[in-house]
Image (cartoon, rainbow, N blue to C red; front, side, top):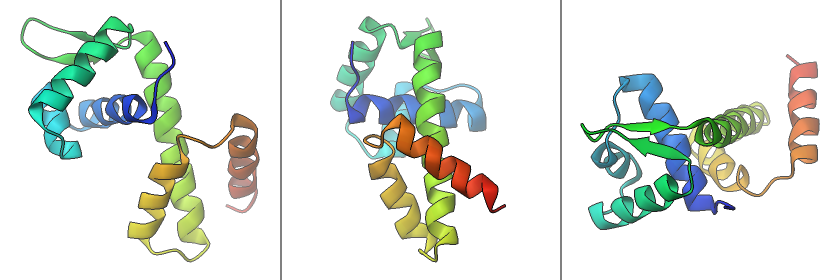
Amino acid sequence: MVLKESGEMYLETIYVLSKQKGFVRAIDVGAELGYSKPSVSRAMGILREGGYITVGRDGGLSLTEAGLEVAERTYERHTVLSELFMRLGVDEKNAVNDACKIEHVISSATFAALKKHLNDYK
């Protein structure tokens, strides 16, 4: 199953919230992203069927190995791109918003080159 940008956003949000709170429910994801309960419910079903998340009896969401891989990759892209843009002089709000858009479409090769460039100048 190939994930769309929205699927990556959901997985990244579950990842970040789980780091912050430990226990994440669909309602937490919806609140964080500003999405309606029906939209989140549908997305969670798709992610569960795709093998990216599991849902516990208590409603807790957990990333599977595949889900964790996508979430970590997306989050790394987000943080590296945000930092790069801010170092270039972009204000934090715009840097984070732009990184959020680009993180889903940038190629692995281009991202690796940007990451290397950023690390070379630390």
